[in-house]
Image 1 (cartoon, rainbow, N blue to C red):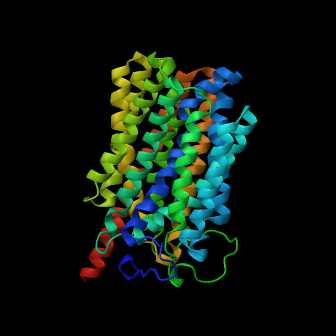
Image 2: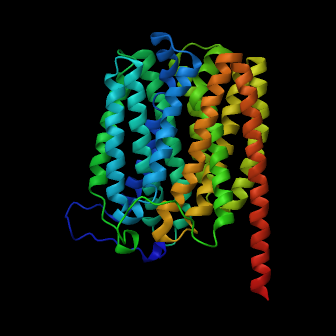
Image 3: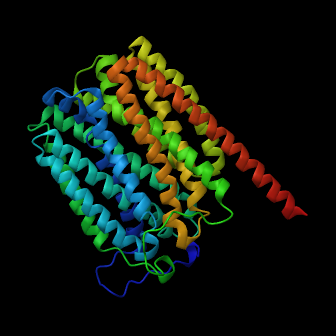
Length: 414
């Protein structure tokens, strides 16, 4: 089943959203998932100073999220293929509400860990069906833009996390809590819109769901590898900014204003969104290859900014980092979402996210341990080496995909 054959039932409720409104609601769920995941980014330094946390403890707050998220992807990654996108997103956004609430009232770091776990559960349930639904609610003939819109939506969520969080922490009362109360209100509104989404066809929710190992449809395994490596490289690069970005700006660049830090980090997110929209007309395989090369260049810039303690160089790093992330993530999603069969789309997208989040969490926690033991500069150097290796894998995977496509074209010509 393709996007053009999706038929949505709108007769069950006069309040069911239109196809266009459903498209933007699904994209908003993707955005709010990333806003929630990144919401503590500008708060990490405040947690560290208020509760006397080491870099290991701070990055552990970040790492709890992908660990729980991965567990939910393993168990529930194919859930939306059986019970529908809407129902699964409702469970996910509900868990996000609970996680944000714990952050909003947290009196100690233990509450933050619990809230972070609920955030991981919520994103694990909400992001995969939202990604699939953006494609399925796309207007006829415009399915190719789905991955670009999803990327732009997640980038908008990241931008709001750092800008809103940074502004409220720096200039508003209750710096540990107010930004989470604001986010809680936003998530509640999104939950209301998700409630009004139409239900999907039986093709997308057939059979009885039960936990089962993830499987890939035959014929798309090379596509899956290329997609998974590209998204993993993007997420891993992003983990440097999400887990350590505030400390990088604060310690290496020398600024103490949390709002300024949030604006600096948001430069990358804004660039991600702009890049995703600008690149939507290009083939996904080309996007990931160019994104990998841009990542290698940006890693050199990142290390240079750390050595020079230069704010302008760091800002240039965030801009190029946003370009490389946008190309890798949008291209990686585009490779898999447009080729996965509809009744396997949720599980296939979940399998891509699974690999990306496992490695992102491992890299973030490792960088925190190295930063504690040997300093932030050493941690950055290790991150450059690891992410550079992933970028080289992306280039190799893109080459393998191009070779496979070439062979298929030759066979078809015969």
